[in-house]
Length: 124
View 1 (cartoon, helix red, strand yellow):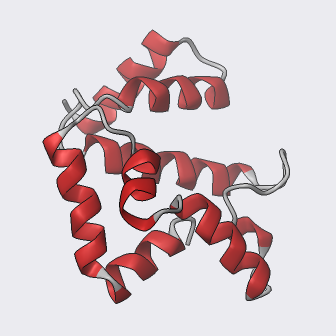
View 2 (view 1 turned 60 degrees about the horizontal axis):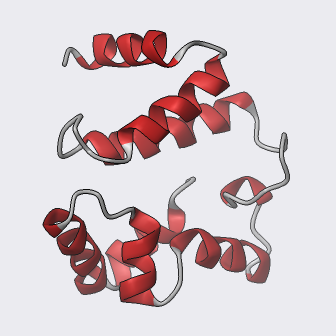
């Protein structure tokens, strides 16, 4: 449920979600948070944090939980979902190097070893 604000957007405002996707299709270097700000006038991470607080949901649903709060499993899922979203259009997505760096730090591996591991899993 890490990306529940995005799920809510797709369920309740798919036109807005499609507008964000179109902006990123037009400019593959455009980061999600920038496209979200342009279309929604708020980043989904901030919206999600506000909803977690307002609805008194578990803090694990908030991307901005205190450092160390998410379990290793929750962090793994978050990083995997982020990478999957970015490679959906191909490994040349501009956000992939940042994802690889985050995953490398999490796994305590070099960037090249992490990329090799990830592309080995994907087969690409």
